[in-house]
Length: 292
Image (cartoon, rainbow, N blue to C red; front, side):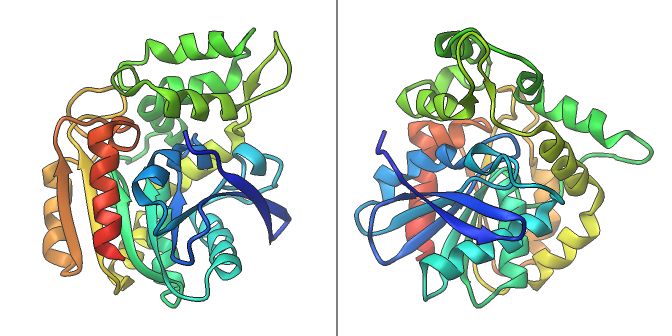
């Protein structure tokens, strides 16, 4: 894996940790998923370097930004990311958002059109086909994320034990490699035999509730975005099974509503391999180059 450099950006409440791969003037901003970190964007670096730099923050409550306090929520992350863009680029950039990061990317593009030239959404960004009703949003988050949120309460005796926990995950097994191991290693803090994830469960739950409940805000933001939007969808979900997170019936109405939307299905991928697997990273890289 290409190693990043790290720097900090001032945001409300403290400093946001940001990873950067490359020194090119043209910047691509990468936004990670709800229980992830900047290092989940590392697979894009070899695809985009040396012509483009990849800049990816640890969103508030994750990675090197884990100590940043709330409030959390998609709008807060979008404002944090606007600060990052103001610090790293004097021209509008392409923003790649994966999973929850895709929703942040939409709010960022809608709220700061002067900073965003194009958006690439990776298996996220459109309202999820979830019948919420009176259901507990935390129960929905647990059901969607499974082991990804379960591990936030666990400790591990070694890095290898943490790898073993993830090796049996049905969606990660087919994309396992150095990028996955680097991502998992960065996720850990503490000392053996009491290693644990850096990710704040409070942040995850707050962001999950926000994503589920505030569909109206997302709907309005999607309709307000004027730059190109390129959606890439996996064919399987977070546990490598069907239906996918964004099935055709959830996307079809948006193809009609958003003339700036390109919808692409990346064959034989799941929610993780669409960024960690060779097929997925190539498709995302091609979308970024096409948006630049």
